[in-house]
Length: 266
Ligand code: GUN
Image (cartoon, rainbow, N blue to C red):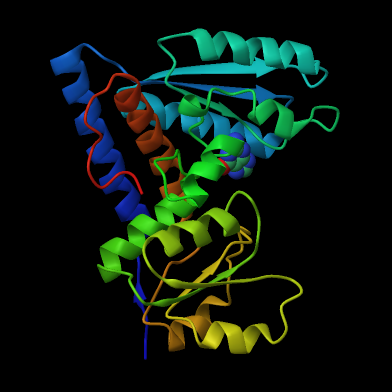
């Protein structure tokens, strides 16, 4: 079989368009402009690129965007004080603290200081628990993007065998929870899994959560046996920012007791 290529870039453009349309409607009908604050501590070059790209996409979707750039030597108390201010600011609907943080800062502590309703990364322990118990949560952007593309491509996922390779808190575990929520039979494989090949071959859905820019799987060999595949670059990556925008819109709607846009949440 030769695989259908799932065009993540085109799909992300559609999602960004849908978000922008909903933002325009919120402004016109409710005088509400969703806003996202991104916090970057230090000057990691890759993080700088991500943060700039997130800010640009946020503005393009018609939302307010704030970038808070703090020096690498910022203390935990200073960072927590900024998060407190953002938590209390009614114009800020989403807060993202870019990871990784400098080593002297405790990421878990910092992330869990964010108001869970503004946690557009879905990394706060409350959101992890809500997702794991099938309740309304903020959902991590990369797995949410994968779920949207799978639903678009396959329709119902019920009963399918899904294998997630990788058990990270950011991708693997939430991806497994989302697939379980859509009634897949889910296996999480990882570095200690015995006979990874055999586990992967029984999958109807295979998600490699290791997220390297070179691509998650050997594209050429997988494309020969898969029904459909996302390329790298242009697969899941563009969906991550699109879902960040979707999550910011969702957070603004929930905060104001307005109906959530369809198709942009889990
Ligand atoms: N660093 C790399 N990916 C991410 C992400 O999705 N969210 C945050 N906050 N930091 C990241």
